[in-house]
Image 1 (tube, rainbow, N blue to C red):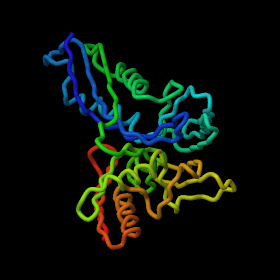
Image 2: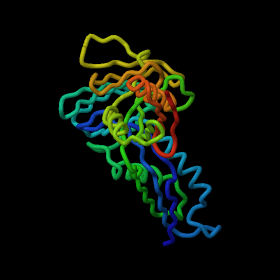
Image 3: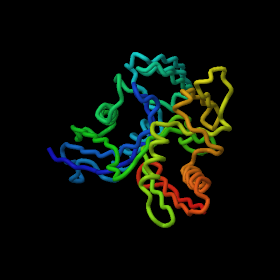
Image 4: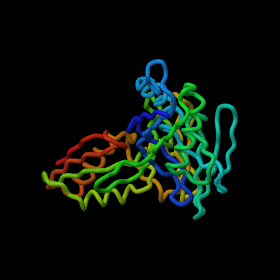
Length: 281
């Protein structure tokens, strides 16, 4: 059997429901290894086909979605042909509610989402779509090796033309802050802790609820109606949509407001190898 591989075929930016941590944003690098007989081209599978067909399948079914552990005992799911409504109770008793078109979620047969479990789910979907000469598929999912701080956040961008409009998808991100031209690791740690396992919501998307201990977000975008209810302690509110450009600017302006005589430059990442720069002062 011959084998080939593609490292960092794609990056999955998504959120998932965690038994302890609740709604959790994540970014995983996807590597793939295929084994089988050589075809008439002398290949296991053309790299061009991997980068198009295989990558597209992974992105379509798992990227920018909310991954749901279907076997978790705290999950209650009601689903029609077009939409769903779910309630998820963490082990600490916190309740998360999510309603959206079905394309915004991916059910995974497990009681807890992990890279290994999701990799197996991707492998199962791929096997049925690959040529007969390919007889083994191995997916390796792993977070970026970040040197320094990172934080995991979820959000939704109602004005986005693509899948970022889904109300609960997210990222594992790092942050670089310069203070008067010098990097400040202490400020980076402060902001990473402030935004650890958080949902960043636009105040404009808040909808009134009687419960004082939760936040209810809702909007309608081109893909349909979305809503999300979370414990208030798991939310941060800003006055704009949570694009990475706005997040970088929010951090820079907040730092300058606290230290008006100093200059700050913020490099905020959105997942892996992409982000925005902002400065203030």
